[in-house]
Image 1 (tube, helix red, strand yellow):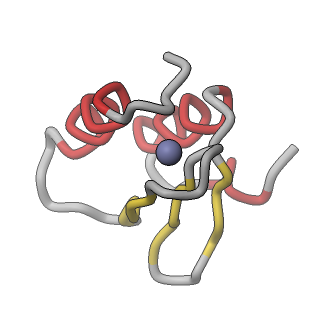
Image 2 (cartoon, rainbow, N blue to C red):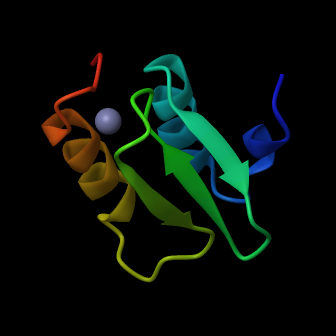
Length: 71
Ligand SMILES: [Zn+2]
């Protein structure tokens, strides 16, 4: 499917898949990914090599807090 499925870290690739399945648009800007919500008002970046081991889980918690999230 998308080019973004080639995230170098498997756990963060799964994070991108979850964003995708929630209807978010994923853009590859080169140094990081940018996820944009269905309504167009919410977005954040997903870094390629975050030093925080909890980064993926925190990104998903953030996703669930967005009012337009389907998850
Ligand atoms: Zn939104």
